[in-house]
Amino acid sequence: MICIPWRTISQDITTATVLFGLFVAILIAYVHRCRKRLPPGPPRSFFTGHLREIPRSQPWKTYQQWSQEWGNVIFLRLFGRDIVVLNGAQVAEELLEKRSKIYADRPTWPMADLIGRQDNVGFTYYSEKLRTSRKLLHSGLGPQTKAAWAPMLEEQTLTLLKQLMESSEDWESLLKRHVASVFVRFTYGTDATDEYIHLAEEIARHTGLALQPGWAVDSFPFLARFPSWLPGMGFKRWAKRAREQFYQCTRGPYLVTRTAVLNETAVPSYVADNLKVIFEGSSSVDENILMSTAGSIYGAATDTTTAFLFSFFLLMTVHQDVQKKAQDEIMSLLGSSRLPTLEDQPRLPYLEALIKEIHRYNPVVNLVSHSPLVDDSYKGCRIPQKAWVLCNVWSMTHDETLYSDVDIFYPERHLDLNTTDPRRFTFGFGRRACPGVHFANAHAFLVISRLLALFRILPPVRPDGTEQIPTIAYTSSFTSQPLPFTCRLQIRDEKIL
Ligand code: HEM
Image (cartoon, rainbow, N blue to C red; front, side, top):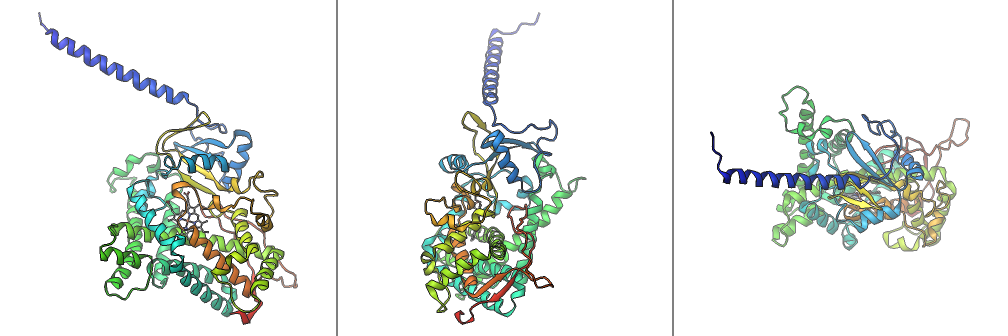
């Protein structure tokens, strides 16, 4: 007979009891979590989730319509991911502003990580690195540093006007080039070369591709750990090339400015100013963080600014009456004496209202993505940790309780200072809100006021002499731009330049 010592049996019983207790506790926690219901949403297919329900074209408009049936917080599932759409200003402010610490993260995007985008502030997960990056950006872009970048903005807009006087039919490419020059100047203090612009456009194309749904690695992140020579791992080889180009685009211009700082030939810029204090020993910021914040500016600033300015051109081409009112305001303040400067901004309220209305009418970024760091709940519904929280900016700037006749382009609504400033939504929320907001507002004011002072923006003319008013329509991309349209620029007051 085999004799098992009593001590061993009693140890086994204790271990089994502890394990069973642990199992029961986990089960209770799991059941409790699941019993807290998820937010409501349209019915979905068991296999494809809401793939068929979510339209490819301007989904933000559909989400707004769904809110009438399902409320302001809607739950969707796509490619195995939880998506929570926030459709109103109140809920966005409640969650993303008041609970900003919870909603400071970005959704995980394994494919974007593979192409190196963790070194781009807009994608960086919430961490010490992100906090340092944002501090650096705020200190370079905030209103306290306006005196440092305002003269550069004035000089660059003047160059744009002169180029437009020479060849106004090239307004589209000149405007794009102007935007690129402004951000390369601001960041590195150098001229934007064709090579850099081309590489940066390639990087933006790669980002767009990586963010498209359907990459297997986004649903099964463990695939990223498999060797790239295995069959079916072509995405890893593509990602490696894309990542190398991304680092080339970030390092190249940074090193040029760094060398210029060391040689004492650098002109003031975001990178040069920060490097000087690092080299003097007055700042302990890691140079790698400075380099990646600098590399993030171009991507975050150019597409958004270009989309906004193109929208201005389209809306002025169609709404001649609004354009005339803005021009009359500039004329009554300045006559033909000079071009507007940033000091004139507070004295041109109609122009300020016009800028607000361009933001409201078609927000540049209609869906802003955040992600909660922990499980959260709102009005009894669970918002799962790591869910993809999509803040529907469109639904806020088209909320009938905030703005009347939402589909009408009507800057006058903002002359009443009680009207909600749409930029409260269009530049994002909480701890991820756009650090470039002050720069963007100053830039928009300078370009728009100076263009209107010098030019009339007119619809194209058909062969029979009648004007062809373009249709107002926008893309469905991440930054929503007007669909291609044409307009004419006519000089209205040459003496002003
Ligand atoms: C019309 C112009 C612009 C618009 C409409 C715009 C809008 C936005 C929006 C909606 C976000 C996301 C905010 C969020 O997640 O809550 C964002 C992020 C960001 N923007 Fe802008 N932006 C503009 C111009 C600029 C400029 C001029 C710069 C820099 C010079 C800039 C730098 C950034 C950066 C670095 C981020 C990422 C912040 C983070 O993830 O923590 N943006 N912007």
